[in-house]
Length: 316
Image (cartoon, rainbow, N blue to C red; front, top):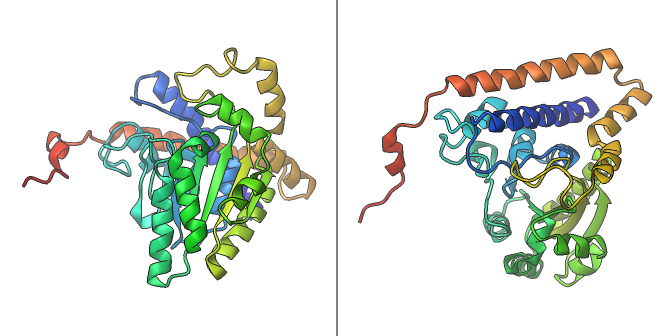
């Protein structure tokens, strides 16, 4: 399991690094929000799920898509706007989607997808299933009315959902980030009559443990949970945002990078005799080759036909 977690996190990191390069070269258009620094959340959380469980997330979705099992080829081709992308090249960076994996987006409007996750959880309960829906969002989404409405309904109706705040400290609206830093998430969760927990999300094992408990709670008695994953993004908010020098210092960034979740996991595995430097380098080389293959695949994939603009238009 630890090797699988490491592989997932490394794939996400190398993929995002190449995505940044592709964006700089103009191969990716529009917005592009990278997941570098937060990989323990996606790898740890999604490793707990069954294939028939559901995932709904916000626009920082590349890492989560890869952790859920979407191929690097399908994601990179989508970023390039090509026909072989997971959404046919029409969704782009913020709207990755794969119904076969029960990966239901990739949503660009802050907080708007949280009620959708509650709706998925309601459908599960209505049909008598035992699946769970995981919903990921940034800390700034807690300032959106839809967040409160969805959690109130989830608590009232006892829906099998796990709501996950990826608190990377500098969301859209840093006043909200500062407020979250001083808040006890268990108190907030109690206002919706659901359990809550805050944890160090640079530790992939802490993430797995918390998600395991929350998923079991949702699966066994349809109780939702609110989790605050305290993490740190090593890149800017998007590719148009400076890495440091505006609202955070270079010194702060360097200090936070000492707790890189990949290095923390590698150090643990090395100490346990599960991996050495040569094995790590070999794994890293394999993943770099996989990401290069996804780039080549995306480059060779054709653009969508012009008629695709009207593929989902309903004419009365």
